[in-house]
Image (cartoon, rainbow, N blue to C red):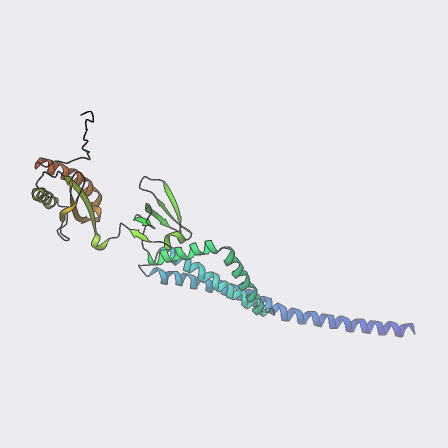
Length: 290
């Protein structure tokens, strides 16, 4: 009786062992192939991501109006996008509900976007500055009617610049893009205008003074003929007749020409017999003892 029981137990144990081995083999075959497929998919996806990202960078770099930073951003964005698609495909092979996963990622992205709203606005503004390029490194730029800065570098988050007297400045891209930009280094037909007001005495000959300034403009090679110099009486001041001296030069000559002609104009008017008046007041004294 005991031999019969032992035989039954051995048979049952053998059957269970065979079932366990078969189940293990089935799991290994099923999930083993999935693991191998996932590894192959990751390797192929990585290689595809590298190739596509490089192609995207080359495609963007072909445009002369696009900054090199935009090409680098396009390459990184393409690489990350392909890798995310590969990871989602790998999760699907293991039966993960990617729809819920994508929804969670979207919600997380929305939360991060709200938390980093200021930073993301700077990035968006930086991309617009790099794409549209309202200025480039080395340009003299005025932002929002404030101070003038010399641009050093346009970054994703900030624009690096320095003042003409050399202190360095970091301006958030959102502030630059969201305000009026005046680029003094990029002018119409590469021309710039400047105005100088010369005051002469009320007793001087106005016509002769204007002719003197016209000759000064004609003799200076930096002064452009088109647009022609504009030299007219501008106003009648308290102590002087003010003559507007308005001329155009090339952008590169603008600063030196303005300084030189300010000095030369005063000297030419004085040499022609005109008086450069200075503010003065007439004081009348009354003797009340009379």
